[in-house]
Image (cartoon, rainbow, N blue to C red; front, top):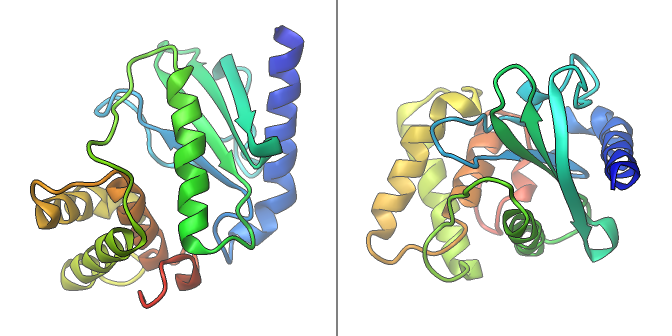
Length: 205
């Protein structure tokens, strides 16, 4: 088991290292996403969880608990625990370069579902059925409109998270679908200049 986890971590690190230069101009040839396991306690920014410059999971800061992959490695995840305080996080990598935006969303959701099934701690599951293409596009449109109304272009995605997620969920009211957090994140990263607008659903800019 230890050898399998070490090999998985090595594969994730290698994928991140190969794609790091591309990250500066486009998101997700390989994307690492920390998934909130307990909403108020965990980080949601991948860059904050790597060591300086190379996005390794520093073994002096993180203890690997488990992990897995889907679709022949197109999606993979690692559960880890911070050595300083025992707080858990899940890190995901998705190889979606060349996928249409909605197909990238489906890969994300499939990877997330696999990670949630093996999570050693309770996870928050979004309500509703999986968002359709039109619902995902609508959510991204609402998120972008909220960003333009309240923030300057380039504002850090962490800063805008709570406001944008709240606006998207309020707009959907009692008809929430699973993927609204993803849509809000996509829009926030585009607005922050961390991801090209082409990664959004067609017609969203």
